[in-house]
Length: 339
Image (cartoon, rainbow, N blue to C red; front, side, top):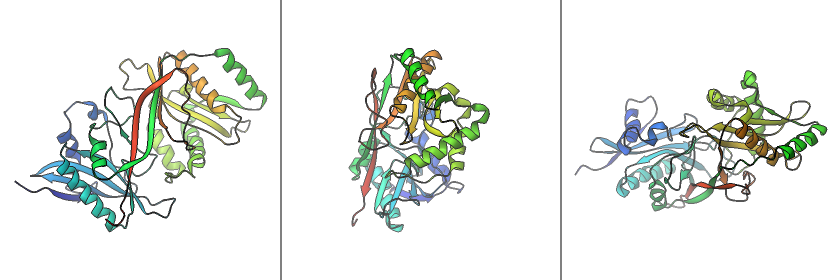
């Protein structure tokens, strides 16, 4: 029986096609994975690892260095993970990952993550329902393959779905009046100035998240480029911005239509944040305004996606009246120790 072997490749190399072939060798054609999954990003990528079994590519991952690390522990990220359901193959892949980590003197590996929290990261804990837009899809056994290699949970997330969209229009109107008296307005995204609007959100987000333990640096230009690609999907009333009289951003909430919803009546809250000195309750008001917009636009549900379950500042809040659990996810870590 031919022995398993590994190759190291990179995008543009002659053998990179093997890295790409792993997906078709792991999934049925035309299934959920065909709508997209974890794919490598160019920034900080140093190796694409492939396991080959008798000429057939059966596992892969991408290896990134954390060049903007916030702690003294040298860290790497592993993403683009795909593997057949075979522990021997998974072990071979992770053996190469460990060797690569030693080469770069890495002591901590986090994944799955495409090099940055701004990119695709975390595993779904289950695949027991159709996924929503921007939710990761992969085989349900992937988290167990990582656990078998010594990875442990670093951060857990949940998504919740609100199918009621109970809107208290009068309460929202009164809160708008109170904010207006304080010189604050909540306005929709101006798509005619999309680049400028995304730059405003980008600068705000970078400042809001820069002190978080998993923060990885991103420039405003990179942020704009990343989200400008979604411009055709953005609905102005689903991206709400709280601004003062100078149009300085105090908080925002960012949602998109669920493109995977069969009848396109669902929407997904992708991100939200508010400035520390913003009025108390502004985040809740933005959420209520978003639910009002969604209902008026004909959406029948809102998914509050990827909320951290710990008490960290990135947490958007677990108390969502009318919302029920809809998904759970895990980001893993491995400390190399003396291995």
